[in-house]
Length: 105
Image 1: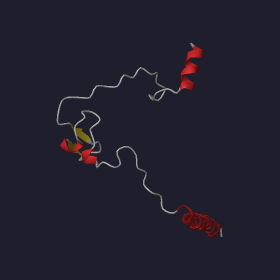
Image 2: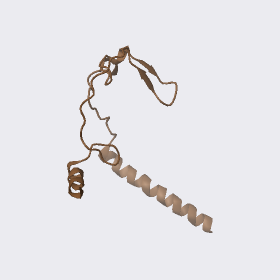
Image 3: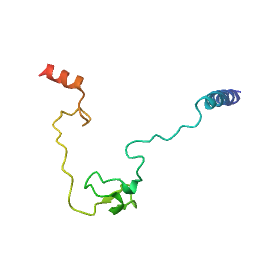
Image 4: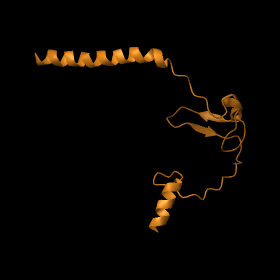
């Protein structure tokens, strides 16, 4: 008896979510991929953020879990000056966070 009640309850939840999905899917439809950055340029023609050369000139090693990109040159782009304070996660701190820290010190 308890097993039948559990199955009925589980099927009820599944039925509810299927019903919600069937009602919302026509309204929202399929989600479109979001384009950002150099969307109009193919990836092979975009510039490397480390050396500035075209990505087609690079060796990309994907045989392990960590992808390794080998630049064709030893030259590197200059680093942007970054003197902003960081938050506890290593991200640039917001203005509100900087004010809070300034008040504490």
